[in-house]
Length: 466
Image (cartoon, rainbow, N blue to C red; front, side, top):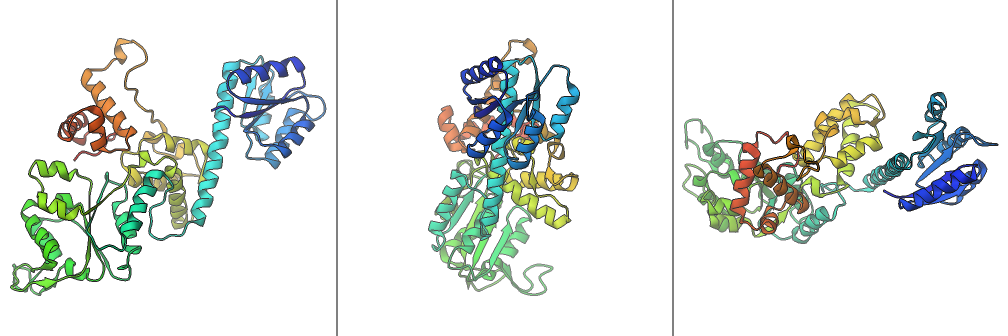
């Protein structure tokens, strides 16, 4: 990550040598011979990093470092010290230096240190910007994020908020489908009405039918009084059918009729009751594939999917990870009474690198744990779960030819499939098109490669099976 580097070195030959070496590596170096001149340049111009020698006439590098940390704490300082001068290096770190490097200077080592310093500054600036953006954001029930993928989904929500057509929200588990449904309700003309939610996978068929449609007194053993169903309770508002793909096949015709006729018949009842509620459904399943496999009614699918909204996985949302993390830090710090105000740049870097197979829900749990464990005002790398701290993206093809590093064709195929899924933001339809297979074949390969979900924790970029 090349950047603009201010070099402070009183020896001309060394100054020119370092300046030319950094130019060849893509940096934009500016060289000065004294600390006073460096302070003048810093006050008038912007630099990504300062590289200064410690031993200089007049103001030495240690004093320069202290002045920069005091006046421009956003600019990391890398100090150059004589080989073996450990005490001086420690003093520089205590003065606020980002890192140090010893003489004679190894250009490759210097480049690595400067790249980390530039990245450190960029991450600090991004965390600060996102924190400010979060403070200015109005909490209208929307998901937190600035990524193009999320903005596209919410642009569609805004367009259809006042329309009563049925909406099907799709996306991986943990992407915030209920949050999107609540935003759809809050932005529409029915916002003053109730928002009623039910998880279709959380209860047995008979109880689910009773909850949705209601029941008459005496309809079954424990029906000692009549009960109004959720369709009717949602009158004037929104009924949210979460995990609709898990609805039993035998109950789907009754749901279809309710959507078509806008009336429901309670279990054991003789009369039908009209309802006036907008229906929003959500699923992490591929309902088209479920239709092909006769696990979901085709006519019900089309009735639910009048307007489709697909939510992107967290790994496709870029810096939204940091924006969400800041929101969760503030929430959990306030709840626990701890003085934690954000992320360290190193922790932010690890959060950005991780794949988040559990999406926003996993990130929320991660930050809650980190806030509970931290002893500092900013979350550090050590506060993060081990899987996040030690995560590294698996290479599709090993770089070396060591036989112990080589993988089977099946494993190679599995890695490539997940790499394609990652590149297209989790869209299995687009991934299947790129891979040259149909969706059903892709699902079969995912199921076989993921071992029925048993290895999900080991492979962070696995996408949830249908």
